[in-house]
Length: 164
Length: 164
Image: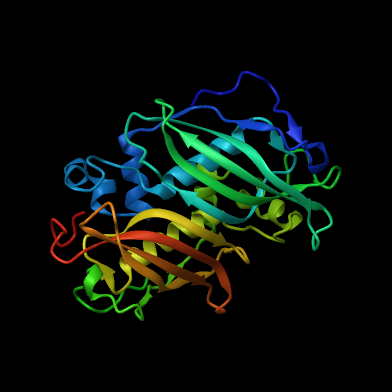
């Protein structure tokens, strides 16, 4: 995976957010081996496991499980910039769409923007931030659009710079 | 994982669905190793990787990534009964909530019910079925509720009994 060049990622607490941030990730090359290994473990359907079965399917070729796209996008977002101090705890997903599959040889990257933000009523250390994360392939074709709500630490409440 | 006893799973096409089906899965024991391995690959946050960091976090202990819960639930549903002839292609997710985390030693299982079904306008071989899948632990506590839309083959359109 192509890493960002900076030595230390910019970290933001809830109070730092203006709402106009763009969270950008690095780019991850996707291999046939990754697709098949994930499918074998979590989504063992023929069109995720085998090129020939993929060709006969609606995908027209080997296609990554949508859950792999979602999980790898999570990884990319966590390692992208800026980051949230103390990590990002998923409260839930508002929606995920997979307009086209991820395929072997694709290069996956994502951009997140803030849909809304508010303080948590029940958890005084946190704000709740709704993010729209759009993942694309190397042709700038959208492979996933996700809207998710996460808990973001308020300033000074994370127990460590990297810790939860 | 505890397997169902039947030799051959019941498979349903779109036309077979009455709307009142319950799709039940086997039960999968969740280990610390599974939680840490998934987190290291896809969601490397301290509270998903390390017991001590988990204790200091909002989870109060090591907690599985929600994406692991989602991916394992997919696996369980695929291997549960009844099944859909030719597999289940995810069109998108309407919502996922994670009311509590999955922890080491938990036993995960799920039940799906049909929220709605209709023929696809653009894909004549398929119906679109919206499923609500509720995953629980061994204490019958809900760990995930997902509503998702999948493509289900119409009768006679799957290229093979198992193929897409």
